[in-house]
Image 1 (cartoon, rainbow, N blue to C red):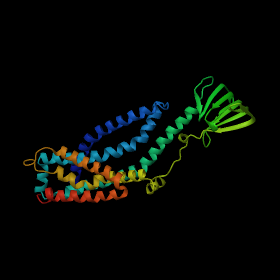
Image 2 (cartoon, rainbow, N blue to C red):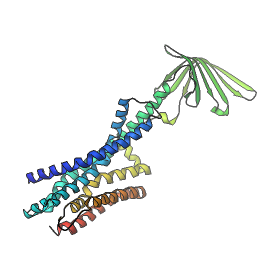
Image 3 (tube, helix red, strand yellow):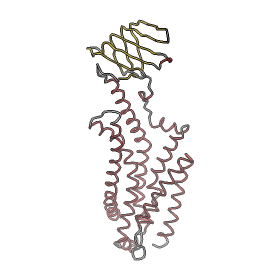
Image 4 (tube, rainbow, N blue to C red):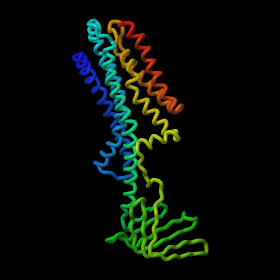
Amino acid sequence: MSKLYRYLGDQLFGSFLSFFLPLFGIASLLFFIKLVSVTAVIQISFWELMELYLFILPQILFFTLPISFFAAGVGALHRLSFEYETIALFSLGIGPGRILAFFRRYATLLSLALLLLGLILIPQAKQLYKGFVVYKKVQAKINIKPSEFGHHFGDWYLFIEKKGTEGYENVALYNQKLQNQENFIIAQKAKIDNDKGLKLSLHSGHAYTYQPQKLKQIDFEKLILYDTSASHFFHYKDPFIYWLEALSNHRRAYDLTLFVLFSLFPLVSLYFLAALGIHNPRYEKGNIFLKSLAVMALYFGISFGISKALSFWALIFAPIWLVAGLLYYNHKIAKRY
């Protein structure tokens, strides 16, 4: 039996690589195109681009692995059937159940790996990706060049004459949105920090507010302005807290349900895999991969639809799909071989 499993493993592995590598390459290319669009907002180096790619790598693996496994399993069994090797195995007393047991082992391991990717690694990677982008945006704000117009600090227009040894010198800010009046601040020295939020510390200056026929002036030794833009704050959540929000957040519940259904696909589709791959080449011709594509499109399409509509109740679709596959397998394979 070990020789049989080793032989089936070689067939599955070779078929898996032929599907996984092209799918992985196409998915990586699509995500790289998405990453390049980020450079329109922030400036990143080549190594930072690679770092962002590592953050989205769990998503690429999560969607390509189950598709590759199902297609590879069907392809391996189809090749064995086409070359009459499954018929030879059946004649030796090795029934479809033993072949199915081999694929069940790998399908179970893959489903567990997908649950790890979907429920732990992907939430962390998404947050790291978001945190990286937020950090680069803040860094871009901090990287203010003296004697250049067009800089902003929150809602304030910011101009700096020159950069000193301990910060900036001769700073001017203008804001016409604060309290529906014009506000103008000048300071001799300033410093920008990113400690618990982006803040601008001004020293030795004057603040002016202007309303029609009224001008107010305030002198200060130190004034601190905070950039309260929501995009500058990021709070990391561990996977448990991240998914706990699914109880009150419909979008998070949709993601959780969809990830679980996608993770279970290799295991609950095992009977469809065997029923499509095992056949008698003298009586059944072609359309194997079209049928495989239809099965995958049906499962993923239904999973998308009911996860959005039914939330957690959509998880009942997994055992229903498993039973449907078992019935199809018994009708097409178990009764014949």
